[in-house]
Image (cartoon, rainbow, N blue to C red; front, side):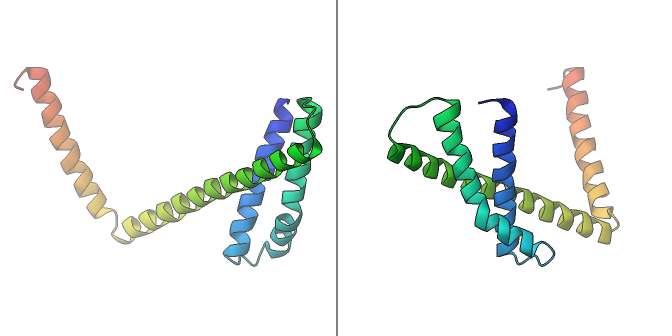
Length: 133
């Protein structure tokens, strides 16, 4: 399996995960595209995995085993995409909330805690360098 095919598989998996999240969160802007992706994406992934196992890797097994393996890999691939996009959503929303909260407080609490922690750490490092610890 070459690199471009692997990258294409990853992109399709992430696109599937993002589309499922967008449909579940009812994002109106991309609704038609995401619904089409959720409908046809698993079929595309299934065909890509069948192609990968049978033609690229040259496995000469029964078609039933080939289809079962491809369906299993497709389901796991979609779940991995969902997990990655979900974690990314959590990080983005958390980062946005942190920046907005700190900006509303004019970053005063952040600066005060940063100075306090930095001065404490600097005193510890200075004491360690001077051999007091």
